[in-house]
Amino acid sequence: DAKTTQPPSMDCAEGRAANLPCNHSTISGNEYVYWYRQIHSQGPQYIIHGLKNNETNEMASLIITEDRKSSTLILPHATLRDTAVYYCIVFRNNFNKFYFGSGTKLNVKP
Amino acid sequence: GAVVSQHPSWVICKSGTSVKIECRSLDFQATTMFWYRQFPKQSLMLMATSNEGSKATYEQGVEKDKFLINHASLTLSTLTVTSAHPEDSSFYICSARGGDRGSYGYTFGSGTRLTVV
Image (tube, rainbow over all chains, first blue to last red; front, top):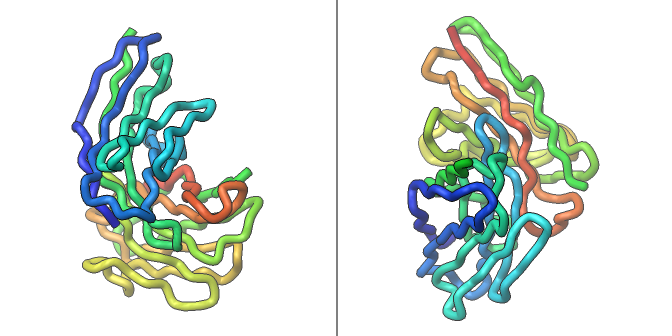
């Protein structure tokens, strides 16, 4: 599976949009981009995933560049409860293993 | 939905004893489950893949005799840390694929905090 690169940490003001970038320049055509987050001392929580089109759900939006070499997770109105480590994972949907990178620690501040 | 239940949520044991952690898929069947370990301020590290009805496969560097995995049914996988030592103290997390996310994505348990004293 392709490797991902994320900034180690980011700050965001409460109520503002949080934009979390991820580079995956070696992604293959059949690999999806997944985002999970881990709030302190809990298991990872699924957020969103996509292949090449932009995706939106009740939690977030996922913007994937046309060349698919990078993506951005957008939390439209960050709250203090969104403070967590966010993981970007590329994954092939044929029962391959899920490997986690180092993630981005998002600090939402009042 | 897709819910994975992990038990216990935390455990303290004496050095040299064994500890069993259970991972259950509550509303779906999971032929494959995964076990992770996470040390403080680090990312999740995949330890092994648990396969229903067959032997688990371990990642490189993970001692299979120390971390015994049993996947006896389609909804239950167990991880036993044998002869635990303080360096085995960690956060252990399981995951499974299935449920309403069907053929994609994984659902994670809430984790087990193991402290060996």
